[in-house]
Image (cartoon, rainbow, N blue to C red; front, side, top):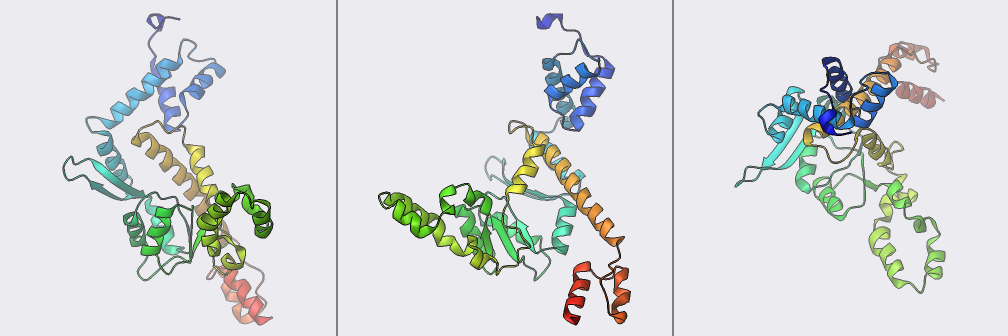
Length: 298
């Protein structure tokens, strides 16, 4: 159909597009929603894209994309830091963190699973978020050389583990090393690659060493990847689109965490067998601490 024959959207159709867009529903699914509900029979995909772009322009006003993003961060009380080019004044570095995420970090600074691309500056800024004289018990990251060097400089005393999911994507590492060397003796470049790229970090990936580190079972960052990808429609949107999707994802995760906290407060542990410790079952200490008391008694 020629676009000249397409009628303008009515107020009800515009509202539906606006409401679904705020819930990060992509255009194709918005169109499917119209069709499934017998609405907007004259609405076409191009119109939905145009309306979404119009809504973004209205939200941004006369601000640039970056000014709009900074405004969103300030509006929602995010921790933020950015650096600009001295000549062009363009933003060249930007870091943000949800205020409740920072609060949880200060209360549970044990194991940090990170996806950071950057130099030591990023890590120093992260370190500022920790309470004074507090460090994590372990860091879990991908194997990226710049990342490893930065961690060594900023967190020299913190055990650092490499993500097992990424390592296991290279299936050849699952085999016995001596057998592997014999089988691939005619491929010295492969053996050299394993030795120089992975085995120099054996203490970060082999359980004989990593089981000595307090990591609470966190040895992979893959669930971080999956959680973020579920919310991101594509990588072609602007910063405002990405931030809105990220903000929704974080809010969803934090709601789950807070619900679990509330649930745990309403459950009284029945494991304390020493009369003098019965008072602790009212929620003064965690269930794990109560279990430790029972174990020590035994």
